[in-house]
Image 1 (cartoon, rainbow, N blue to C red):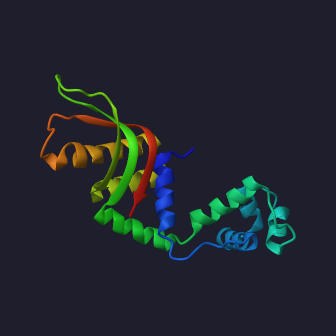
Image 2 (image 1 turned 90 degrees about the vertical axis):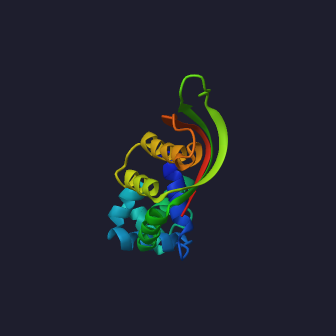
Length: 185
C-alpha cells in the first residue's frame, strides 16, 4: 500500500511527461508488451490471462472491466518516459522541491511553550538535501512514516526554525493527519 507522499511523488512524475501516454486500450497493451516482452508477463502484471492480453492487443476485446482498465493505465504510467523522470528527479535533487500540504503538525518544544498539534496549510520549497533523501527513501521502498519524517524535518528547518533564525529549542516536528499533499519539481 502506498501512502500520501508516494502518491504525490507519482503525480509529480506524471506532470513532467513531455508526451502523453497511449490513450487507447490497444496502444497501452502494445506498449506494455514492448516493455515487458511477452503477453504472459503483461498478464501477470495486470492480473488477467495471456489470452485476454492477446484479445486486447488484437482489438477483439475493447472494454475491459474498470479495475483491469485502471491496472493497465497504472502499469503504463509507471513505465512511461523513464528518462524524463530520471532527468527531472536529478534536477530536483539539486534545486529542491515545492511541497503544498494541509496537515497536522505537532512538535516537541521546551517546557513553557505549547506543543499541541495544529492543522496548517503550508507551501514551502524544501532544500535539495531533503529532496534527495525523499527520492532515495522512495527508491529503497521505505515506509510512508519514514518519508513523513523526512518532510517534517524539512518543514522544521525551513518553516518552524526559519533556517536557524528562530525556535532553536524545537527538537522534533511530526507530520500527521494529511488532508492533501502535492509535490512539484
